Amino acid sequence: MKDLAGQLKLFTELDNDASTQRLLFMKVKKGFSEQSYKLATAQQQLELLQAQVTNNAVRKRKTVQLDPNTKFATISDVQKAQVEAGEREDDAVN
Image (cartoon, rainbow, N blue to C red; front, side, top):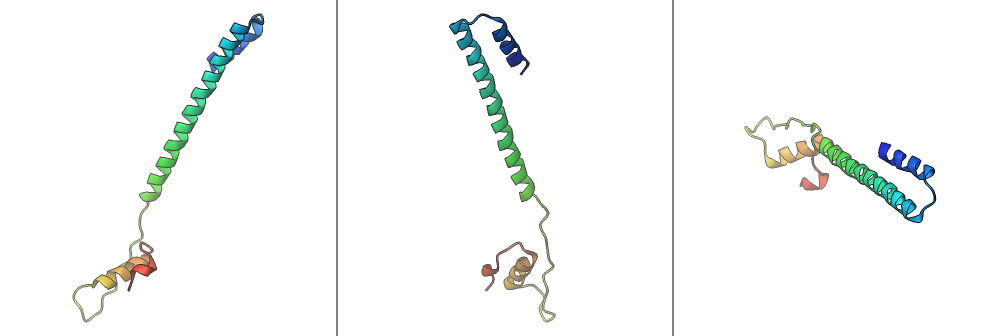
């Protein structure tokens, strides 16, 4: 931006030559284009990092409630615990 300010100061000091004005305005336009590109890139990276943070958030876990008469949990018991913990949709459970 310092270069841009220097170019504008130079523009005010020079005479009103059309080619000089065109050149300076092209430089100003290029400077703004570069800044907008950097801003868009930074915003894209910010969105990507925010998505990674939400995906890596600690997931809630709930212990599977076992029937006292069984040794192991059934698939339906595991799915029920997942629904209660919020990891899964309710329609997945039969």
